[in-house]
Length: 335
Image (cartoon, rainbow, N blue to C red; front, side, top):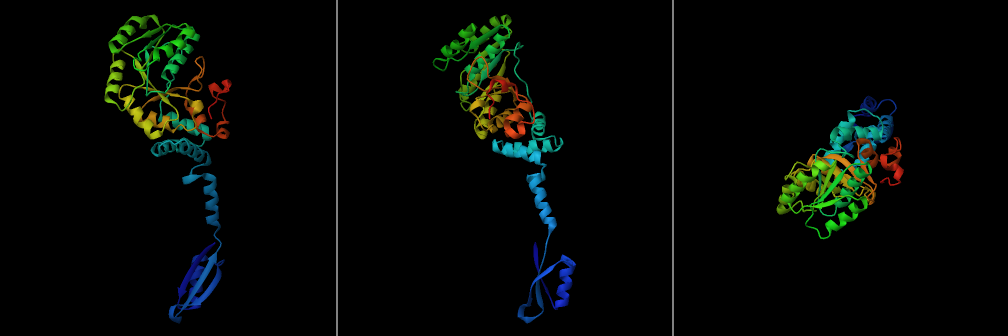
């Protein structure tokens, strides 16, 4: 209902103003003398169904006039802590792609905004060196990658270039010995370059475990850069999936400067908000490749695609519109 007050020299003139603006259906709520007893003041009201219809439409469409499915995508991105600027970018893309349902709209926007390049399971032209801050699971991920290739019947070489952390070699050896894969050790860039020159020709896949280093330490990053540049190899950034988005942005930029090209997210089984990996991928211009979803060496390493990533960030009811992701059979689907 809309209320409005009119002031005029006479009752007839005031009523004419009411009918002109509010129509014949207006109801007179009150009449009063004007200020100082001059003229009249009329308060009139009218039911405004148009405003009610607008409110209903806004509720159905979601915020900012978005179709409901796109509103669901926005709500999910906000829940996961995706940076506001990136949310606006993704929603701008999604608006231009039509309304295909929440998952497909989200997947299409992700596919347009990011690159996806899962790591090869069998052979690779270049060695992979896994880099990242301490505690992100690089050694376990090396073991998972080695196990996947080994179980596929491929020749795998694993090199530990971690001469910093106490017990790093022993931890990785515990994994590789089960798989009967030889573990080699490099002490610095020159040693790593020599090993790669000697071993790469004998393997389908060469994996290098690097020390966990401080991305904000110049000496640490200089040392890592010397490792990454001692021979042709591809650095893969390994990060916890549940990192703070702002912090993840800075970390990813630091590791991108030493050559990181892809992002491998770990610990999805212990993560509920994925805004950090979105921030990292954007900051470092990194390709999404794989994710880990459990601590077991023999499984739990899965490629990530736009659709599987969309399923991870949307609520289960929305994600149910598509077939389950590759890891669903393992009963380890991250929430």
